[in-house]
Amino acid sequence: MGETSPDTVIDSLTGLPGRPAITRALTSDDGPVSVGAVLFIDLDRFKWVNDSMGHQLGDEVLKAASRRLLEAVRQDDVVARFGGDEFVIIMAPIKSVADTTSMARRIVEALSQTMSIENRQIVVGASIGIAIMSDGLDPELLLRQADLALYEAKRRGRGRHVIFDHRLAAMADHRVRIERSIRSAVDEQWLSLHYQPIISLRTDGIVGFEALARLIDPELGPISPAEFIPLAGEIGCMKVMGRHLRRQLMVDAALARQTWPEVSLAFNLSPAETEDRDLADIIGTECEEFGVDPTSLTLELSEDMLVQDRGWLERTLVRLREMGCRISLDDFGTGRASLTSVKKLPIDEIKIDRSFVTDIGKSRFNQATCEAILLLANALDATVVAEGIETHEEADLLRQIGIHHGQGYLFAKPAPVDWSAAELPVSLQAVD
Ligand code: C2E
Ligand code: MG
Ligand code: MG
Image 1 (cartoon, rainbow, N blue to C red):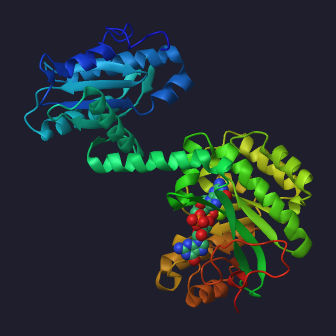
Image 2: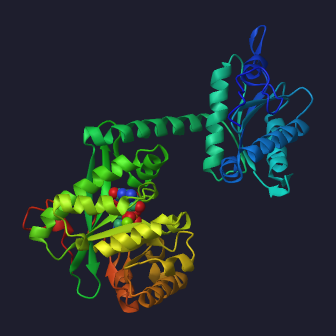
Image 3: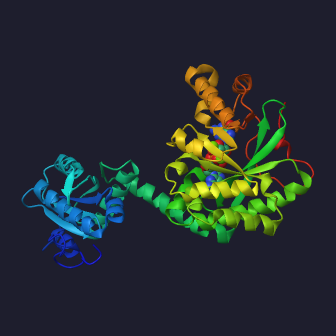
């Protein structure tokens, strides 16, 4: 696939026109074309096919996809290869926007049909972004709009089309600003850790704290970790950010050991960090460097990481546990892990996701889920933590069920802690 260059007039692999044809089709002698649409198409599972079945087969998939596109379009539409597994269709003229959406549906349908190539049955699927031409719009801008719509189509779950509108531009703009913030966060010292206590539901005493990252951009204000952690993973910044946060945790854990020897500090690991095969050794070295006893650390990972496990996560977790770290399964019940993968892993703790804890008194289903998770945890000799407890009713019911630990705004919100101080801030002291 790498041999062909769609920058040329005709792409030698597919025989389709390359990028120059796109600009040409979007420009008439009098300037930009006035009524039409650009469809930006990306094959959903192409990378997977190419990586797992080989480039030769990948090339055949691209050729088959090109043929299907040519069959789907109208006579005067232009089909071009943009690059890699991306294609562009220019529809000009169009009578209404409906012309473009029915075309998009036809293409998604055509590219979702099985391809028989070299005795293999392959289904790739496609996502499409659409931009509608309006008078005088620069071809480059139009392509960028279609590309943004394509990004949104993929974000919404692939196998669909999205038409560009200005909200998408605002979202993209927001994303760009957050990306910029992520890239500066470590150097500019915009990151910190807040801590939320984990409470024994039996004694009401504090058994540990969860470290939660906070990013405050001086211009944008606080950015939620639920937003910046996945984005940092996507843009390849999570390793550096994770390392920076871990070092902060190590400093705090070393101090906490002197004043609060009995508390355990929990730290969230992101998928990007667990991709590092040496993670266990890195954490071991960091513990030595900062004088932290690994037994005082709990590492939280989410269920979905088990699904993507390529074999080494299990080894990493076994190593971490041998070193003395506790392993916790976060947001349990919301991910896609099978019970088999849970059974295989060395797990010390299961955290029930907040969605099963909220209004547990009013939902038989939520209550049954908490009971079932407790049974499962007991069989694994694991502790159960209920997340997101906000009311006394929720805490009482969870206590009755027999859930060991709890965490939530009822007890304390995450807050900064000066671990060298002899007293915890009042806001973090567990209430009776
Ligand atoms: P999580 O690990 O499940 O953390 C619990 C989240 O629930 C935290 O949100 C916490 O502030 C929030 N929470 C706790 N009690 C309550 C409650 O009673 N009500 C409500 N509504 N929320 C409650 P936060 O701090 O926004 O973090 C969101 C997620 O971001 C975390 O979910 C975790 O997955 C991720 N995250 C946070 N810090 C880090 C980090 O340092 N590294 C990594 N890899 N991920 C992090
Ligand atoms: Mg967590
Ligand atoms: Mg959680």
